[in-house]
View (spheres, rainbow, N blue to C red):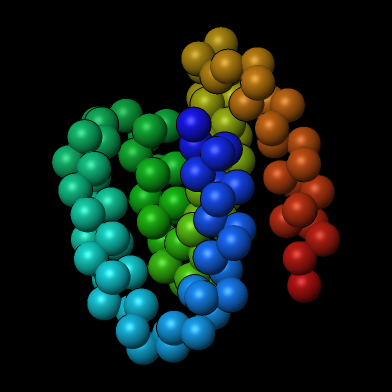
Length: 109
């Protein structure tokens, strides 16, 4: 269903490019505030959970890119779990996902 919605949205791209960024900024601020409501669910007593979450928020804010923030968060989460000896808590798919993410961040300029 989601892929169908994305496919249909392709045809709306020309219309969306007509909207200036000043008009979309308030909506993005509201979305950001709504996303911050999830912070209360973070286990701040567990460093391997809290630090990656904090860094995800920080990287997202400083790079102004949700994709960069989430990517950095996934990498930091994996590294903190491995370094703390809790590598079994990380799904094997996350390790596979880290390979292209490392390549992506190494290729950034």
